[in-house]
Image (cartoon, rainbow over all chains, first blue to last red):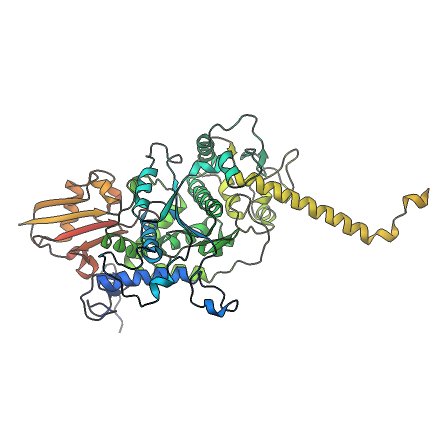
Length: 477
Length: 99
Protein backbone atom coordinates (compact mmCIF):
# COMPACT_ATOMS: atom_id res chain seq x y z
CA UNK A 1 0.00 0.00 0.00
CA UNK A 2 1.29 3.42 -0.86
CA UNK A 3 2.09 5.90 1.93
CA UNK A 4 0.48 9.26 1.91
CA UNK A 5 3.45 11.64 1.54
CA UNK A 6 1.57 14.52 3.12
CA UNK A 7 0.45 12.51 6.14
CA UNK A 8 3.34 13.63 8.37
CA UNK A 9 2.78 17.28 7.41
CA UNK A 10 6.31 17.71 6.05
CA UNK A 11 6.88 19.16 2.61
CA UNK A 12 7.77 16.47 0.09
CA UNK A 13 10.60 17.55 -2.17
CA UNK A 14 11.66 15.91 -5.38
CA UNK A 15 15.05 14.28 -4.74
CA UNK A 16 17.70 16.44 -6.33
CA UNK A 17 20.07 14.85 -8.83
CA UNK A 18 23.74 14.79 -7.84
CA UNK A 19 25.77 17.60 -9.36
CA UNK A 20 28.09 15.14 -11.08
CA UNK A 21 27.78 11.64 -12.53
CA UNK A 22 29.79 8.63 -11.36
CA UNK A 23 33.20 9.58 -10.00
CA UNK A 24 35.33 12.68 -9.42
CA UNK A 25 37.83 11.58 -12.09
CA UNK A 26 37.89 13.51 -15.41
CA UNK A 27 35.42 11.95 -17.85
CA UNK A 28 37.69 12.77 -20.80
CA UNK A 29 41.22 11.67 -19.89
CA UNK A 30 39.99 9.25 -17.19
CA UNK A 31 43.24 9.79 -15.28
CA UNK A 32 43.40 13.11 -13.48
CA UNK A 33 41.11 14.18 -10.65
CA UNK A 34 38.35 16.51 -11.83
CA UNK A 35 38.45 20.27 -11.28
CA UNK A 36 35.13 21.40 -12.68
CA UNK A 37 31.63 20.06 -13.24
CA UNK A 38 29.94 21.06 -16.49
CA UNK A 39 26.36 19.86 -16.88
CA UNK A 40 26.99 16.78 -14.65
CA UNK A 41 30.27 15.85 -16.43
CA UNK A 42 33.57 16.16 -14.55
CA UNK A 43 36.69 17.59 -16.30
CA UNK A 44 40.25 18.17 -15.20
CA UNK A 45 41.73 21.61 -15.85
CA UNK A 46 43.66 20.56 -18.98
CA UNK A 47 40.74 18.75 -20.64
CA UNK A 48 38.36 21.59 -19.73
CA UNK A 49 40.51 24.25 -21.41
CA UNK A 50 40.79 22.06 -24.53
CA UNK A 51 37.04 21.51 -24.53
CA UNK A 52 36.34 25.27 -24.42
CA UNK A 53 38.64 25.88 -27.39
CA UNK A 54 37.07 23.03 -29.39
CA UNK A 55 33.52 24.26 -28.73
CA UNK A 56 34.48 27.82 -29.68
CA UNK A 57 36.10 26.74 -32.95
CA UNK A 58 33.21 24.45 -33.79
CA UNK A 59 30.82 27.37 -33.41
CA UNK A 60 32.87 29.59 -35.70
CA UNK A 61 34.72 27.51 -38.26
CA UNK A 62 31.65 25.98 -39.86
CA UNK A 63 30.97 29.49 -41.20
CA UNK A 64 34.49 29.87 -42.62
CA UNK A 65 34.75 26.80 -44.80
CA UNK A 66 34.34 27.60 -48.50
CA UNK A 67 31.82 25.79 -50.64
CA UNK A 68 33.73 22.58 -51.69
CA UNK A 69 31.76 22.40 -54.95
CA UNK A 70 33.33 25.70 -56.11
CA UNK A 71 36.95 24.54 -55.74
CA UNK A 72 37.75 21.07 -54.27
CA UNK A 73 41.36 22.12 -53.54
CA UNK A 74 40.02 24.62 -50.98
CA UNK A 75 38.49 21.85 -48.86
CA UNK A 76 39.32 22.42 -45.17
CA UNK A 77 40.97 25.77 -45.94
CA UNK A 78 39.68 28.40 -43.56
CA UNK A 79 39.36 31.73 -45.29
CA UNK A 80 36.97 34.60 -44.72
CA UNK A 81 35.96 36.98 -47.49
CA UNK A 82 36.71 40.08 -45.40
CA UNK A 83 38.00 41.32 -42.05
CA UNK A 84 36.82 40.39 -38.59
CA UNK A 85 35.18 42.64 -36.02
CA UNK A 86 34.73 41.41 -32.44
CA UNK A 87 32.07 43.17 -30.36
CA UNK A 88 33.51 43.97 -26.92
CA UNK A 89 31.45 45.06 -23.94
CA UNK A 90 34.17 44.25 -21.42
CA UNK A 91 31.89 41.64 -19.83
CA UNK A 92 32.58 37.98 -19.25
CA UNK A 93 31.63 36.58 -22.68
CA UNK A 94 33.38 39.17 -24.85
CA UNK A 95 36.55 39.02 -22.68
CA UNK A 96 36.72 35.25 -23.17
CA UNK A 97 35.89 35.61 -26.88
CA UNK A 98 38.71 38.11 -27.45
CA UNK A 99 41.19 35.78 -25.74
CA UNK A 100 40.04 32.75 -27.73
CA UNK A 101 40.25 34.58 -31.07
CA UNK A 102 43.68 35.92 -30.16
CA UNK A 103 45.02 32.48 -29.20
CA UNK A 104 43.40 30.57 -32.06
CA UNK A 105 43.79 32.87 -35.07
CA UNK A 106 46.43 35.44 -34.28
CA UNK A 107 49.47 34.50 -36.33
CA UNK A 108 52.06 35.17 -33.59
CA UNK A 109 50.26 33.40 -30.79
CA UNK A 110 48.97 30.40 -32.72
CA UNK A 111 52.20 28.49 -32.38
CA UNK A 112 52.56 28.71 -28.63
CA UNK A 113 50.42 28.26 -25.56
CA UNK A 114 50.14 30.57 -22.57
CA UNK A 115 53.24 28.99 -21.01
CA UNK A 116 55.21 29.71 -24.18
CA UNK A 117 55.53 26.00 -25.04
CA UNK A 118 54.43 24.85 -28.50
CA UNK A 119 50.92 23.54 -28.67
CA UNK A 120 50.30 20.05 -29.91
CA UNK A 121 47.71 20.69 -32.60
CA UNK A 122 49.04 18.61 -35.46
CA UNK A 123 51.32 19.81 -38.23
CA UNK A 124 48.75 21.64 -40.29
CA UNK A 125 46.59 23.19 -37.62
CA UNK A 126 48.50 26.45 -36.90
CA UNK A 127 49.03 27.10 -40.59
CA UNK A 128 45.40 26.40 -41.31
CA UNK A 129 44.29 29.03 -38.81
CA UNK A 130 46.77 31.64 -39.90
CA UNK A 131 45.56 34.58 -41.99
CA UNK A 132 41.91 33.57 -41.93
CA UNK A 133 41.10 37.28 -41.81
CA UNK A 134 43.26 40.02 -43.27
CA UNK A 135 42.63 42.19 -40.27
CA UNK A 136 41.15 41.51 -36.82
CA UNK A 137 39.51 44.43 -35.02
CA UNK A 138 37.68 44.94 -31.76
CA UNK A 139 34.66 47.27 -31.66
CA UNK A 140 34.02 48.60 -28.17
CA UNK A 141 30.71 50.39 -27.61
CA UNK A 142 30.94 52.92 -24.77
CA UNK A 143 27.57 53.03 -22.99
CA UNK A 144 28.21 55.76 -20.38
CA UNK A 145 25.94 58.25 -22.20
CA UNK A 146 23.01 55.87 -21.65
CA UNK A 147 23.69 55.55 -17.92
CA UNK A 148 24.45 59.04 -16.55
CA UNK A 149 26.90 59.00 -13.68
CA UNK A 150 28.90 56.05 -14.99
CA UNK A 151 32.52 56.22 -16.01
CA UNK A 152 33.81 56.26 -19.58
CA UNK A 153 35.79 53.02 -19.90
CA UNK A 154 37.16 53.48 -23.43
CA UNK A 155 40.77 53.77 -22.21
CA UNK A 156 40.49 50.59 -20.13
CA UNK A 157 39.00 48.77 -23.12
CA UNK A 158 41.81 50.05 -25.35
CA UNK A 159 44.36 48.77 -22.79
CA UNK A 160 42.65 45.37 -22.81
CA UNK A 161 42.87 45.14 -26.62
CA UNK A 162 46.46 46.40 -26.76
CA UNK A 163 47.54 43.30 -24.82
CA UNK A 164 46.60 41.27 -27.89
CA UNK A 165 49.19 41.91 -30.58
CA UNK A 166 47.98 42.68 -34.12
CA UNK A 167 44.40 43.39 -33.06
CA UNK A 168 43.13 46.88 -33.86
CA UNK A 169 40.88 48.87 -31.51
CA UNK A 170 37.75 50.53 -32.95
CA UNK A 171 36.15 52.87 -30.38
CA UNK A 172 32.41 53.42 -30.76
CA UNK A 173 29.89 55.30 -28.66
CA UNK A 174 26.22 54.43 -28.28
CA UNK A 175 25.23 58.06 -29.05
CA UNK A 176 26.87 57.70 -32.50
CA UNK A 177 23.56 56.36 -33.78
CA UNK A 178 22.13 59.91 -33.55
CA UNK A 179 25.20 61.57 -35.03
CA UNK A 180 24.94 62.89 -38.60
CA UNK A 181 28.72 62.86 -39.05
CA UNK A 182 28.92 59.19 -38.04
CA UNK A 183 26.05 58.40 -40.38
CA UNK A 184 27.84 60.15 -43.23
CA UNK A 185 30.95 58.06 -42.53
CA UNK A 186 28.80 54.93 -42.68
CA UNK A 187 27.71 55.96 -46.20
CA UNK A 188 24.27 57.20 -45.18
CA UNK A 189 22.46 59.76 -47.35
CA UNK A 190 19.51 61.11 -45.37
CA UNK A 191 21.26 63.54 -43.06
CA UNK A 192 18.14 65.01 -41.48
CA UNK A 193 17.39 63.94 -37.91
CA UNK A 194 13.85 62.55 -37.64
CA UNK A 195 11.78 62.18 -34.55
CA UNK A 196 8.55 60.37 -33.73
CA UNK A 197 5.62 61.50 -31.65
CA UNK A 198 4.84 58.59 -29.34
CA UNK A 199 1.59 60.15 -28.10
CA UNK A 200 -0.01 60.18 -31.54
CA UNK A 201 -1.74 57.05 -32.86
CA UNK A 202 0.27 55.48 -35.62
CA UNK A 203 3.49 57.13 -34.36
CA UNK A 204 3.71 60.27 -36.45
CA UNK A 205 7.17 60.94 -37.91
CA UNK A 206 8.31 64.55 -38.10
CA UNK A 207 11.36 66.69 -38.68
CA UNK A 208 11.84 68.57 -35.41
CA UNK A 209 11.69 72.37 -35.65
CA UNK A 210 14.66 72.63 -33.30
CA UNK A 211 17.65 70.36 -33.40
CA UNK A 212 17.84 67.63 -30.77
CA UNK A 213 21.16 69.08 -29.55
CA UNK A 214 24.21 66.88 -29.39
CA UNK A 215 23.98 63.15 -30.17
CA UNK A 216 24.24 62.59 -26.40
CA UNK A 217 21.18 64.81 -25.82
CA UNK A 218 19.30 62.94 -28.54
CA UNK A 219 20.15 59.60 -26.89
CA UNK A 220 19.00 60.85 -23.51
CA UNK A 221 15.71 62.14 -24.95
CA UNK A 222 15.32 58.79 -26.73
CA UNK A 223 15.72 56.91 -23.42
CA UNK A 224 13.53 59.35 -21.46
CA UNK A 225 10.66 59.05 -23.94
CA UNK A 226 10.51 55.25 -23.98
CA UNK A 227 7.46 54.03 -22.09
CA UNK A 228 8.92 51.17 -20.00
CA UNK A 229 12.26 50.00 -18.54
CA UNK A 230 11.87 46.86 -20.67
CA UNK A 231 11.69 49.03 -23.81
CA UNK A 232 14.82 50.93 -22.75
CA UNK A 233 16.86 47.74 -22.28
CA UNK A 234 15.51 46.20 -25.49
CA UNK A 235 16.09 49.23 -27.72
CA UNK A 236 19.57 49.89 -26.30
CA UNK A 237 20.38 46.31 -27.25
CA UNK A 238 19.07 46.96 -30.78
CA UNK A 239 21.10 50.18 -31.11
CA UNK A 240 24.28 48.41 -29.93
CA UNK A 241 23.77 45.54 -32.38
CA UNK A 242 23.22 47.86 -35.34
CA UNK A 243 26.06 50.18 -34.35
CA UNK A 244 28.40 47.17 -34.41
CA UNK A 245 26.94 45.89 -37.69
CA UNK A 246 27.38 49.29 -39.40
CA UNK A 247 30.93 49.47 -37.98
CA UNK A 248 31.61 45.95 -39.32
CA UNK A 249 30.42 46.94 -42.80
CA UNK A 250 32.40 50.17 -42.83
CA UNK A 251 35.59 48.34 -41.82
CA UNK A 252 35.20 45.73 -44.58
CA UNK A 253 34.38 42.94 -42.13
CA UNK A 254 32.68 39.79 -43.33
CA UNK A 255 32.13 38.53 -39.78
CA UNK A 256 30.98 40.17 -36.57
CA UNK A 257 31.48 38.03 -33.46
CA UNK A 258 29.60 38.56 -30.22
CA UNK A 259 30.49 36.95 -26.89
CA UNK A 260 27.01 35.66 -26.14
CA UNK A 261 27.37 32.61 -23.87
CA UNK A 262 24.81 29.80 -23.72
CA UNK A 263 23.32 31.40 -20.62
CA UNK A 264 23.04 34.88 -22.22
CA UNK A 265 21.79 33.28 -25.43
CA UNK A 266 18.96 31.45 -23.62
CA UNK A 267 18.10 34.67 -21.77
CA UNK A 268 17.95 36.68 -25.00
CA UNK A 269 15.80 34.04 -26.74
CA UNK A 270 13.21 33.83 -23.97
CA UNK A 271 13.26 37.55 -23.30
CA UNK A 272 12.94 38.41 -26.99
CA UNK A 273 9.97 36.05 -27.45
CA UNK A 274 8.34 37.53 -24.32
CA UNK A 275 8.67 41.02 -25.83
CA UNK A 276 7.06 40.11 -29.14
CA UNK A 277 10.20 39.19 -31.08
CA UNK A 278 9.11 35.60 -31.86
CA UNK A 279 9.20 36.22 -35.60
CA UNK A 280 12.93 36.99 -35.31
CA UNK A 281 13.90 33.93 -33.30
CA UNK A 282 16.14 32.76 -36.18
CA UNK A 283 17.98 36.11 -36.24
CA UNK A 284 18.57 35.86 -32.47
CA UNK A 285 20.61 32.74 -33.26
CA UNK A 286 22.48 33.80 -36.36
CA UNK A 287 21.91 36.48 -38.95
CA UNK A 288 23.39 37.89 -42.11
CA UNK A 289 22.94 41.62 -42.46
CA UNK A 290 24.08 43.32 -45.69
CA UNK A 291 26.81 40.68 -46.27
CA UNK A 292 28.02 40.78 -42.65
CA UNK A 293 27.56 37.50 -40.77
CA UNK A 294 26.79 37.95 -37.09
CA UNK A 295 27.99 34.89 -35.19
CA UNK A 296 27.90 33.94 -31.53
CA UNK A 297 30.69 31.34 -31.25
CA UNK A 298 30.33 30.93 -27.46
CA UNK A 299 26.73 29.85 -27.62
CA UNK A 300 27.63 26.29 -26.60
CA UNK A 301 29.52 27.50 -23.53
CA UNK A 302 27.59 28.40 -20.39
CA UNK A 303 28.36 31.30 -18.06
CA UNK A 304 30.11 28.91 -15.68
CA UNK A 305 32.43 27.64 -18.43
CA UNK A 306 33.28 31.22 -19.44
CA UNK A 307 33.97 32.27 -15.82
CA UNK A 308 36.17 29.23 -15.17
CA UNK A 309 38.08 29.79 -18.42
CA UNK A 310 38.56 33.44 -17.51
CA UNK A 311 39.91 32.66 -14.04
CA UNK A 312 42.26 29.89 -15.14
CA UNK A 313 43.67 32.10 -17.91
CA UNK A 314 44.09 35.07 -15.57
CA UNK A 315 41.80 37.33 -17.61
CA UNK A 316 39.88 40.25 -16.14
CA UNK A 317 36.60 41.84 -17.13
CA UNK A 318 36.41 45.62 -17.47
CA UNK A 319 35.77 47.14 -14.04
CA UNK A 320 32.44 48.80 -13.43
CA UNK A 321 30.04 46.45 -15.22
CA UNK A 322 28.54 44.66 -12.26
CA UNK A 323 27.23 47.82 -10.61
CA UNK A 324 26.72 50.07 -13.61
CA UNK A 325 24.46 47.78 -15.59
CA UNK A 326 21.08 48.90 -14.29
CA UNK A 327 19.07 46.59 -16.50
CA UNK A 328 15.44 46.34 -15.52
CA UNK A 329 12.27 44.80 -16.82
CA UNK A 330 11.62 41.55 -18.67
CA UNK A 331 15.29 41.07 -19.59
CA UNK A 332 16.43 41.15 -15.96
CA UNK A 333 13.59 38.91 -14.78
CA UNK A 334 14.43 36.39 -17.51
CA UNK A 335 18.13 36.50 -16.57
CA UNK A 336 17.31 35.86 -12.89
CA UNK A 337 15.08 32.94 -13.90
CA UNK A 338 17.62 31.33 -16.27
CA UNK A 339 20.57 31.78 -13.89
CA UNK A 340 18.53 30.30 -11.04
CA UNK A 341 17.55 27.39 -13.28
CA UNK A 342 21.16 26.84 -14.27
CA UNK A 343 22.21 26.47 -10.63
CA UNK A 344 20.00 23.47 -9.90
CA UNK A 345 19.19 22.10 -13.35
CA UNK A 346 22.19 23.01 -15.53
CA UNK A 347 21.17 20.88 -18.53
CA UNK A 348 17.82 22.66 -18.83
CA UNK A 349 19.44 25.87 -20.07
CA UNK A 350 20.94 24.15 -23.12
CA UNK A 351 17.50 22.59 -23.71
CA UNK A 352 16.03 26.11 -23.89
CA UNK A 353 18.53 27.06 -26.60
CA UNK A 354 18.09 23.79 -28.51
CA UNK A 355 14.29 24.01 -28.42
CA UNK A 356 14.31 27.61 -29.64
CA UNK A 357 16.69 26.48 -32.41
CA UNK A 358 13.91 24.28 -33.78
CA UNK A 359 11.40 27.11 -33.99
CA UNK A 360 10.55 28.41 -37.45
CA UNK A 361 8.41 31.52 -37.82
CA UNK A 362 5.21 31.09 -39.77
CA UNK A 363 5.30 32.73 -43.17
CA UNK A 364 8.01 34.65 -44.94
CA UNK A 365 8.49 38.33 -45.55
CA UNK A 366 10.53 40.68 -47.69
CA UNK A 367 9.96 43.67 -45.41
CA UNK A 368 12.49 44.75 -42.80
CA UNK A 369 11.66 46.80 -39.71
CA UNK A 370 12.95 50.37 -40.12
CA UNK A 371 14.26 50.48 -36.54
CA UNK A 372 15.85 47.05 -35.87
CA UNK A 373 16.42 46.13 -39.57
CA UNK A 374 15.26 42.57 -38.95
CA UNK A 375 12.49 40.85 -40.94
CA UNK A 376 9.05 42.21 -40.09
CA UNK A 377 5.86 40.22 -40.48
CA UNK A 378 3.29 41.77 -42.79
CA UNK A 379 -0.11 42.78 -41.45
CA UNK A 380 1.01 43.25 -37.85
CA UNK A 381 -0.91 46.50 -37.41
CA UNK A 382 -4.07 44.96 -38.81
CA UNK A 383 -3.80 41.99 -36.47
CA UNK A 384 -3.03 44.18 -33.47
CA UNK A 385 -6.00 46.44 -34.20
CA UNK A 386 -8.26 43.40 -34.49
CA UNK A 387 -7.32 41.71 -31.23
CA UNK A 388 -6.86 44.65 -28.90
CA UNK A 389 -7.92 48.19 -28.18
CA UNK A 390 -4.71 50.17 -28.17
CA UNK A 391 -5.99 53.56 -29.21
CA UNK A 392 -9.21 55.50 -28.79
CA UNK A 393 -9.58 56.12 -32.50
CA UNK A 394 -9.60 53.22 -34.89
CA UNK A 395 -6.73 53.44 -37.32
CA UNK A 396 -7.03 51.55 -40.55
CA UNK A 397 -4.07 49.27 -41.26
CA UNK A 398 -1.24 50.84 -43.22
CA UNK A 399 -3.05 54.15 -43.31
CA UNK A 400 -0.69 57.04 -42.77
CA UNK A 401 -1.74 59.70 -40.32
CA UNK A 402 -3.07 62.72 -42.22
CA UNK A 403 -0.41 65.26 -43.08
CA UNK A 404 2.47 63.13 -41.87
CA UNK A 405 4.03 59.78 -42.38
CA UNK A 406 3.24 57.14 -39.82
CA UNK A 407 6.04 54.94 -38.48
CA UNK A 408 3.77 52.13 -37.25
CA UNK A 409 3.28 50.24 -40.56
CA UNK A 410 7.05 49.96 -41.00
CA UNK A 411 7.83 48.43 -37.62
CA UNK A 412 8.11 44.80 -36.60
CA UNK A 413 5.82 43.57 -33.84
CA UNK A 414 8.61 43.70 -31.21
CA UNK A 415 9.69 47.29 -31.93
CA UNK A 416 6.08 48.48 -32.18
CA UNK A 417 5.33 46.88 -28.80
CA UNK A 418 8.45 48.45 -27.26
CA UNK A 419 7.48 51.93 -28.47
CA UNK A 420 3.80 51.78 -27.60
CA UNK A 421 3.35 49.55 -24.53
CA UNK A 422 2.42 51.59 -21.51
CA UNK A 423 3.62 50.61 -18.06
CA UNK A 424 0.91 49.90 -15.50
CA UNK A 425 2.85 52.21 -13.18
CA UNK A 426 2.62 55.12 -15.53
CA UNK A 427 5.86 54.51 -17.39
CA UNK A 428 8.78 56.79 -17.97
CA UNK A 429 7.59 58.36 -21.25
CA UNK A 430 8.59 61.84 -20.08
CA UNK A 431 9.42 63.29 -23.49
CA UNK A 432 6.67 62.61 -26.05
CA UNK A 433 8.81 63.36 -29.10
CA UNK A 434 11.63 60.89 -29.53
CA UNK A 435 14.68 61.21 -31.78
CA UNK A 436 15.07 58.25 -34.14
CA UNK A 437 18.37 56.53 -34.96
CA UNK A 438 19.85 57.81 -38.21
CA UNK A 439 19.21 54.69 -40.26
CA UNK A 440 15.44 54.92 -39.63
CA UNK A 441 15.07 58.00 -41.85
CA UNK A 442 16.93 56.39 -44.71
CA UNK A 443 14.99 53.14 -44.36
CA UNK A 444 11.70 55.07 -44.43
CA UNK A 445 12.76 56.98 -47.55
CA UNK A 446 13.74 53.77 -49.33
CA UNK A 447 10.49 52.06 -48.35
CA UNK A 448 8.50 55.09 -49.52
CA UNK A 449 10.35 55.02 -52.85
CA UNK A 450 9.72 51.28 -53.22
CA UNK A 451 6.03 51.80 -52.45
CA UNK A 452 5.80 54.57 -55.07
CA UNK A 453 7.46 52.29 -57.62
CA UNK A 454 5.00 49.49 -56.81
CA UNK A 455 2.10 51.95 -57.08
CA UNK A 456 3.39 53.22 -60.43
CA UNK A 457 3.89 49.60 -61.62
CA UNK A 458 0.32 48.71 -60.60
CA UNK A 459 -1.04 51.76 -62.45
CA UNK A 460 0.76 50.75 -65.66
CA UNK A 461 -0.37 47.11 -65.34
CA UNK A 462 -3.96 48.25 -64.86
CA UNK A 463 -3.70 50.52 -67.86
CA UNK A 464 -2.40 47.63 -69.99
CA UNK A 465 -5.37 45.45 -68.98
CA UNK A 466 -7.98 48.01 -69.91
CA UNK A 467 -6.06 49.45 -72.86
CA UNK A 468 -8.40 48.12 -75.54
CA UNK A 469 -11.38 49.81 -73.90
CA UNK A 470 -9.74 53.20 -73.69
CA UNK A 471 -10.70 55.83 -76.21
CA UNK A 472 -7.75 57.34 -77.91
CA UNK A 473 -7.58 61.11 -77.40
CA UNK A 474 -6.56 61.73 -81.02
CA UNK A 475 -9.40 59.52 -82.34
CA UNK A 476 -11.95 61.51 -80.39
CA UNK A 477 -10.75 64.69 -81.97
CA UNK B 1 35.92 27.04 17.68
CA UNK B 2 38.43 26.88 14.82
CA UNK B 3 40.89 29.59 13.80
CA UNK B 4 41.70 29.49 10.10
CA UNK B 5 43.95 31.47 7.77
CA UNK B 6 42.28 31.66 4.35
CA UNK B 7 42.99 33.31 0.97
CA UNK B 8 39.89 34.78 -0.63
CA UNK B 9 39.73 36.02 -4.23
CA UNK B 10 36.93 37.81 -6.06
CA UNK B 11 36.71 37.94 -9.86
CA UNK B 12 34.40 38.62 -12.79
CA UNK B 13 33.66 42.15 -11.55
CA UNK B 14 32.77 41.03 -7.99
CA UNK B 15 35.85 42.76 -6.60
CA UNK B 16 33.88 46.03 -6.88
CA UNK B 17 31.66 44.85 -4.04
CA UNK B 18 34.74 44.24 -1.88
CA UNK B 19 36.46 47.62 -1.81
CA UNK B 20 37.73 47.01 -5.36
CA UNK B 21 40.21 44.47 -4.01
CA UNK B 22 40.63 41.17 -5.76
CA UNK B 23 42.63 39.32 -3.07
CA UNK B 24 42.01 39.20 0.67
CA UNK B 25 44.11 37.30 3.22
CA UNK B 26 42.02 36.67 6.33
CA UNK B 27 42.32 34.90 9.66
CA UNK B 28 38.95 34.05 11.18
CA UNK B 29 37.57 32.14 14.12
CA UNK B 30 34.44 30.17 13.33
CA UNK B 31 32.41 27.73 15.43
CA UNK B 32 33.16 24.09 14.58
CA UNK B 33 32.34 22.54 12.18
CA UNK B 34 33.55 25.51 10.11
CA UNK B 35 31.96 25.10 6.69
CA UNK B 36 31.61 27.35 3.62
CA UNK B 37 28.11 28.33 4.73
CA UNK B 38 29.59 30.06 7.78
CA UNK B 39 32.32 31.65 5.67
CA UNK B 40 29.76 33.16 3.27
CA UNK B 41 27.90 34.62 6.22
CA UNK B 42 31.17 36.00 7.63
CA UNK B 43 32.08 37.58 4.26
CA UNK B 44 28.64 39.20 3.95
CA UNK B 45 28.97 40.68 7.44
CA UNK B 46 32.64 41.68 7.48
CA UNK B 47 33.94 42.17 3.93
CA UNK B 48 31.02 43.10 1.69
CA UNK B 49 30.90 46.87 1.13
CA UNK B 50 27.76 47.39 -0.96
CA UNK B 51 24.78 45.80 -2.69
CA UNK B 52 24.32 42.66 -0.61
CA UNK B 53 21.76 41.41 -3.15
CA UNK B 54 24.54 40.89 -5.69
CA UNK B 55 26.27 38.43 -3.34
CA UNK B 56 23.47 36.75 -1.40
CA UNK B 57 20.01 35.42 -2.12
CA UNK B 58 18.45 34.84 1.27
CA UNK B 59 21.10 33.20 3.44
CA UNK B 60 22.76 31.44 0.49
CA UNK B 61 25.12 32.52 -2.23
CA UNK B 62 23.36 34.14 -5.16
CA UNK B 63 22.93 31.91 -8.25
CA UNK B 64 25.42 32.88 -10.96
CA UNK B 65 28.43 33.02 -8.61
CA UNK B 66 30.98 30.32 -9.25
CA UNK B 67 33.06 29.09 -6.31
CA UNK B 68 36.43 27.36 -6.61
CA UNK B 69 37.95 25.75 -3.51
CA UNK B 70 41.68 25.14 -3.96
CA UNK B 71 41.22 25.49 -7.76
CA UNK B 72 38.39 22.94 -7.80
CA UNK B 73 34.69 23.56 -8.41
CA UNK B 74 32.88 23.56 -5.07
CA UNK B 75 30.26 21.22 -6.55
CA UNK B 76 32.92 18.49 -6.32
CA UNK B 77 33.68 19.42 -2.73
CA UNK B 78 30.18 19.38 -1.26
CA UNK B 79 29.30 23.06 -1.89
CA UNK B 80 28.24 24.85 1.32
CA UNK B 81 28.92 21.73 3.44
CA UNK B 82 32.66 21.71 2.65
CA UNK B 83 34.68 21.75 5.89
CA UNK B 84 37.22 24.57 5.73
CA UNK B 85 40.88 23.81 6.38
CA UNK B 86 43.68 26.12 7.40
CA UNK B 87 45.36 27.58 4.28
CA UNK B 88 42.39 27.03 1.93
CA UNK B 89 42.23 29.17 -1.22
CA UNK B 90 38.67 30.19 -2.10
CA UNK B 91 37.60 32.04 -5.25
CA UNK B 92 34.23 33.69 -5.96
CA UNK B 93 33.61 34.63 -9.60
CA UNK B 94 30.53 36.38 -10.88
CA UNK B 95 29.06 35.13 -14.15
CA UNK B 96 26.54 37.98 -14.22
CA UNK B 97 28.78 40.58 -15.89
CA UNK B 98 27.12 40.70 -19.31
CA UNK B 99 28.25 39.35 -22.67
